[in-house]
Image (cartoon, rainbow, N blue to C red):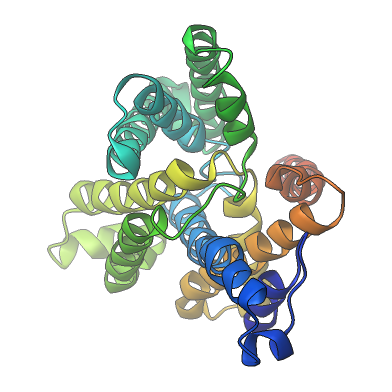
Length: 311
């Protein structure tokens, strides 16, 4: 992860070197502070937040397909953030708050729809998430219709595709603080999270309010995702890939899985951002690269789940 962080700082449309930085080259220093450091920090913390949120969703719902984008949280947060950009104009704090409200509404609707499904199958949360995602996309289309074509529409379109190109030092402090606080609280509740996924009855016997704990963890994960989406836009599949990769590496050591999910999420987003700004003459949306990895992996998970169900 450290290597990917420093690579993200050095590589881009205007490459800089450690030698130039140590020599206090004026152009290299300006590029470092204005262009590279803010987006590298946002990729580092944003990927960490998405990875941990994905781990929380998959653990609580008991479904390997659960992730911020698949269950509709990212789309809901995007709709909330787009609404704030068009009608509120209250800066990054207001955008994050509206993104959080949109993401939380998406979680609540997904939970409500899945609860109505007969048998309460783990796949019901995914189906509910698909419906919520479609609804959020409809809201986003309506918001784009109301946007000013000359001032707002292009930026919203590019933001929805996911990019760190517009990240500055002034935009990231609030989001990074939110991600760090939510991650720290999730780590503090990590034992309860694992207990909810394996020994729910034992958790009740120990006096843990299962419903309250589950909602608290969902609240924290959703707030972290909203803090990321409000700055980077819609980034797909990081929250799906990171927890699965962490489980493969951790094996039976579930205690390390949460932190490793965040670390892998950081690595994925840093790598995707480095490719997005260096592989073509113009900067590409990050989701192109995360989707190239995530879409085949999602198909693999669906086929593996189907094979498991037929046994």
